[in-house]
Image 1 (cartoon, rainbow, N blue to C red):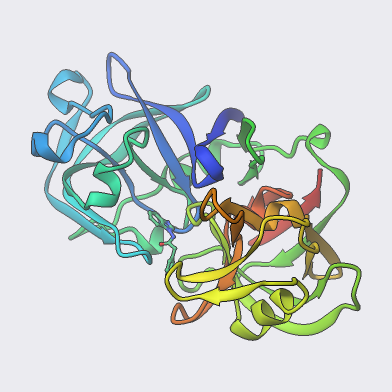
Image 2 (tube, rainbow, N blue to C red):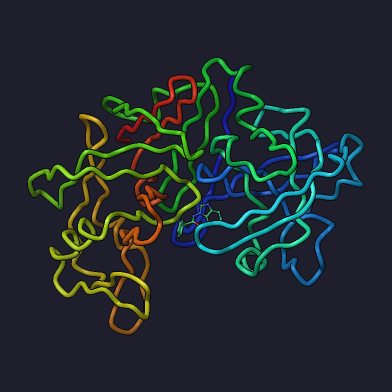
Length: 328
Ligand SMILES: O=C(Cc1ccccc1)Nn1cnc2ccccc21
């Protein structure tokens, strides 16, 4: 069995939104697939109306297949400080043509302002490892964990694009989706993430520098967050680049296009084109851009977020406990 679903970027590729269906008859919601967390939670009829601003909500009482998971609750806080909490239903969830009949659907009762102020995002679907699911007293499986035994291969792929629809595929590697070879690297899932270590990096056409960078492949994070020393080495090559504490990161003139950023994956490399490093203009006046590569200070590991992922075709292989990166 295998399946595919389209995923669309919000403005500036800040997040990628993917349609899912929950319940009977199906309730269609659009959520953020997040390899950096492992809860499937959605806006719901159990929330205060003031916390809902345009989102579509899940109504378990309108689903003939929903069953409350008695006594279970969940609460999650993400690295950026946003948070949500609520209770849990078991219901049928469909992604593309793949259905899990008894999926734990975490219905929100409360969400922080970041979610309320994001009208197009109806929730999150975690694609991290079940070990970090927040449901108490008994953690619940992710959609992928529930479906993976029935897939032709225990993997999913992320093909995120810059300003264009991409796709998540489950159970197969589409040879037409990438070029060249896939570089494979082992995954450390001890923290519940898709963790790996990159051997080093290069700036533009410069020499490759051996510099271990341990981090996670995280579709739920917008930017590429790397060690301070690597980030300053990169921005040193851009005229006028500076760390702007007001903006909370490196800012530089939007033109000329900055140098590419290359990072290693095992014995292969991934190239982030310079035009993808200019994440977004900070003001229309003097055309300064906020960098897509920023420091990982305080996190404890690097985060290879959408800025890194959208340059590649990425295989999240749970069967082999490895990540595959390919150009496209
Ligand atoms: O929270 C983050 C980014 C982050 C910032 C600072 C420290 C650590 C990580 N990503 N993320 C990953 N999944 C998310 C889901 C919602 C919001 C943010 C999400």
